[in-house]
Length: 122
Image (cartoon, rainbow, N blue to C red):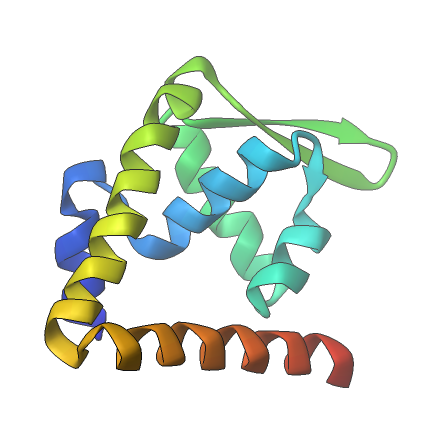
């Protein structure tokens, strides 16, 4: 699955995780790194490292607000959003080609349900 995902995202120059961060920041400008960590079920320190890498690529910038670090897209990051959405569509299609459409849809639903359950359990 990782190989398929990496192939789908090759055109963006990012991994799927970085793509998810970009899309989330696009949908929720000013999201905190703590909120990003909760959405990705990842340690805040890991998200901080991811965000620094995206800052180094000039795709994201951050601002401090009290004790929180808020993330925003740069112009370059905003331009990349369409490519990332295309990569997600390509990934879904690759899974469908490999597993069959019905199985691929069930997998996506199951993964979403697991993510929701993890949110509830925390």
